[in-house]
Image 1 (cartoon, rainbow, N blue to C red):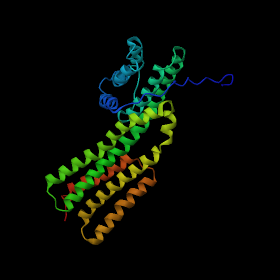
Image 2 (tube, helix red, strand yellow):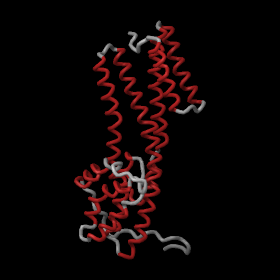
Image 3 (cartoon, rainbow, N blue to C red):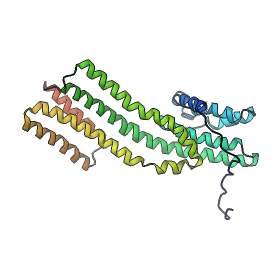
Image 4 (tube, helix red, strand yellow):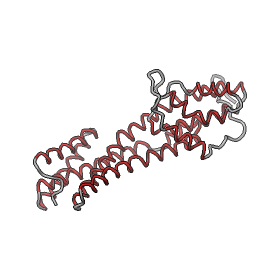
Length: 284
């Protein structure tokens, strides 16, 4: 029972929510890779989102083509989020559409409004988190990891082709494994969350994870910069001093709130200066 002035919650779908089987999940997963294929200034990723939802809508509204077309039109409106996070939004939309499909006619309007509101709100939240996590933290971390692999390989005397293959292969594997996992798992997680997606997103400690990844990337970058300084200075005392200097400078800059982008650029500049002086990263 609701008090006067309090908006009523949408009616809960009668019966058990239909299961998203492996076949349907694979279809949605495959289509999610095309979320950026139908950009437009009017609705951004909206047409592609509708394309991703089509298999599920056919299942929900297979007995009514008219309702199916109406449902598809609901998902071809404005939508824009970070592409790796779209599985969570798709899963949530599938859960709400299943509820709408099995609701009585008088209950559908508030559920449709709730779905539209949740899509708008969650797309912005997922975009902000995804940009910070993948573009701002994970991609630089994987680049630093690849650089560390290359530096270690050269230090051990590996061939240049082997080092290059390990560097490129390591980057692609390290970067894409969590991306693909999130695309796949996000469908199921978003489906389970349903209209509780805001609570689900808030329960995950995104910011500590982002901070940890950034610190790890900077640590790897400073280590590679220190290795370059070792090659310039030579000798055990110079190596120790270069190591301490690189890490002290990095953490001091971090303490002064210098952006990660500037710190990565500074570390790269060290490598450029070392190369211009004719000192290879492979002094061993």
